[in-house]
Image (cartoon, rainbow, N blue to C red):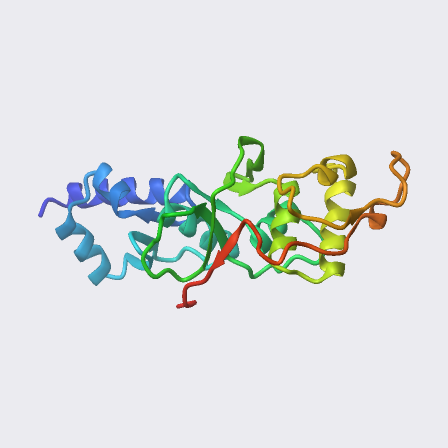
Length: 220
């Protein structure tokens, strides 16, 4: 074939992947003019490799935590958000798991087998949705409640609350009237600006949470 065509495709592919942490979707490959046949050649030549359904990584791109989060969002589509411990990590909350790769999607959707954890929800407000460093993410307040509904240890939840307040990502008052009214047993020793965030305690929560945690086998 014309080498100029190959150079053009390589340039388009590299440019696209550079803006997405080294990953691209099949739909994006088509948008830049890469056919199914050319895609298969790129795979055979080791230029790209599949890391999730409909998502490929460019050769040489580092397998970072951020790349995994980006790949998950691209795989799950526009109605997906980094959530739970993965969101806590992006927000910089204390005691977060820097290896967590977790997402939330609308309940009723069921993706193919994927190499990460997927949660579903029927309750998602605009205020729960933020963008952190270019990635669609659940807000810090929503993340605190998600961790509680996932039955995280009380000390883990306290650490999340403490750091969310300290980093000005939430406030005691906001958490007390947060997104899940069924979350109970929240107490604040002193409701005043000077109170220590660590006095916020999530002592008990519902045994039938609104957020159902759905797991697929981790294939990574």
